[in-house]
Amino acid sequence: MLRLTPKIIIIDTAGFQLQLWRLRLNTYTVELARQITLGQLGHETPTGLYFIESKTRKPDWKAPNADWVPEEMRGQILKFDDPKNPFAGGFMSIANTDGVGIHGTKFDPQLGTLSSHGCIRMNVNDFVDLYKKAGLGIPVFIY
Image (cartoon, rainbow, N blue to C red):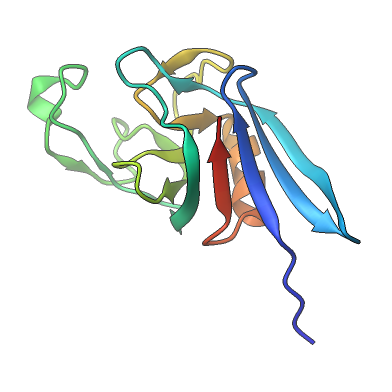
């Protein structure tokens, strides 16, 4: 018998915390809670209700045409194994957010700060744990 277990990711922007909630026996409980990094001023993480649209463990990165990207990298697609590709552990794309997602990073994630370019960054091990537990289509509520 197939049994679906509803889950939701809640992102508390004021507390820099991501929580994965799971419904068990008619009660929601926190299955995972981790500290995160959010978008800096001018690159704010969007708020609202969204959904996990896609997931990959080895994401390539298309460097945006933005001032914060070195000019020679703008518009280039950097393969996952390229040392300049910032992703580590994977990437979960959030639908309707213009490229924003949840991911680990090869660099210092600067947890508890506004230092990303809109994405929700996590410690790599924390991200991998979330990746295993959060399926496609899971709601993501950012407030």
